[in-house]
Image (cartoon, rainbow, N blue to C red):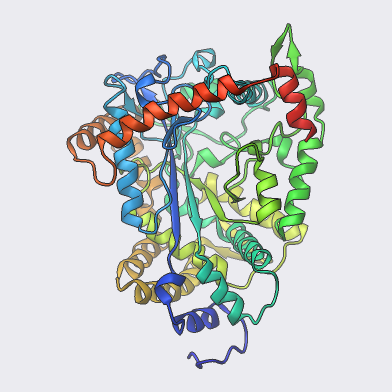
Length: 535
C-alpha cells in the first residue's frame, strides 16, 4: 500500500505511488517515441532489387524520413518523435505509402532474414553521393562487407527510440531526494534503465522474435573471417532451414553479432565509463581486420583496421543516444550534453503487420522500458553482464525449449517462472500508465503478452514455424503474399499525418541539401578522413 509522502525504500512500487501523486502526471508520462524500420526492396517474384535508390524518394544522405542502411536495396524509414503510440504507427504507414508509390511496383520484404540472395556480390553498397561525408558512409559499408560479409548486412530489424520527459526525470529526482546536476542525474537514470534492459531483454526475442527459419541461400553467404556454423539446424519438408525452438536467428551468431566485439569490456554503469569503453574499442587494433588492408590498389577497403571503424559498428541490443549537432560525433554529443533517449535494437521485423511493428508492441515497450527505469538496477560486475549475454544467446536459439533455464542472479529459472514474476511487476506499471492516460490499453497489453509466457505456441516464432513446417506453406510465398497485401493496403489508404505535398517538398529539399554538402567540401577525401579521426 502506498503511504502518501513517505518513501521507505526506492522500489518500483514506491516510485509508482509517488509519481501517482504528481501535480501534473500527464506531463510526467509524455513519452517520446520514434521508430526506424528497415526493409529490403524486392521484385514481385522475390529477387533482390538491383535498382539504385530512387531519385523520387529523395537523397539517402539527407532525407529526414527515407534513407538506406547497408545496401542500395535496404531501405530505412524513420519517423519523427511523437508522444502518441498511434501517431508513430500512422507516420510509418505514411512514409511507406509514399515510398511504395515511387518504386515501380517493387515490394518490401516483410521478414528480418533475407531470401533470394544467392550471390553476395550482387548486394550493392549504399551510395550517398560524392561528398566526403557520403563517401565515408560508403567506405564504412565496404569495411562491413569485408569484415562480416554482405549477407549479415541485409538483415532487417526495427529500432525503437524512446525517451522520458524532463518532467518525469525531475519527479524521480525529487522522489529520490537527489541533488545531483540534472543532466547527470538523467544520464544515470538512462544507464540504470539500460542495465535492467540487458538483464531482462531476453524477454523481447521471446515475445517478438520472428526469425526461427531461414532460406538455405542465407547460409551460403559467409565472411572469410567467420567460423563454421555449429547450430543444430533441421530441414522442413519444403526445403527451409530452421531451429525447432529458436525465436530470433537475427540476434544469433548468424546475424547481428561480432566475434571481434565479444571481448570488448564496455561498461554500462555510467556515461563516462561507457564512453571510455567505446573509445578504447575504436582505438583497439585487430590483427584479422589488419589483413584486409585499408587502402588497396588505391581503393578503400575499410575506414581503418580497428575493432570498430566508427562507433556505429558497435552491435548492441540497446544504445544510449543524443541527437548530434552538425559535425559532431555521437560520442561527442553524449559527452557534451548527456543521454537524451535510448535506442532499442533487439526487435525483429514483425511479418504479421504492414509496418513491421504493431501498436500493441509499442504499448508493451512503454511498460517494459518504464519498468526498467524504475526497478532497482544494481551496478554491473563482469559476471553479471556476462550472465545477461548468456541468457540472450540461449533465448534466441532455443527460447521456446521447455527445458531451457535462464540465470537470474545465480538462480536458475524457466521462462515461465521468471516471466510470470516479471509480469506481476509489469502489471503494476500498466495500471499506473492506464490511470495516467485514462485508458485500458496497457493492462490489456500485459494480459496479451503474459499469455505467450504461459503458452509458447502463441509467440510469433512458433506461429511462423507452424505455418511453414507443420502446414507446409512456403516461407517465400508467405513473404510475397504479405508484401503484396501490405503494398495494396497502404497505397489505397489515405495519408494520416503527412501528405503528398510534404513528401514531394522534402524530396526536393533533400537533393538540394546533398548538393550544398558536396559543394561545401574543401579538402580531398584522404585529408577529410585524417582530420575526422584526429579529432
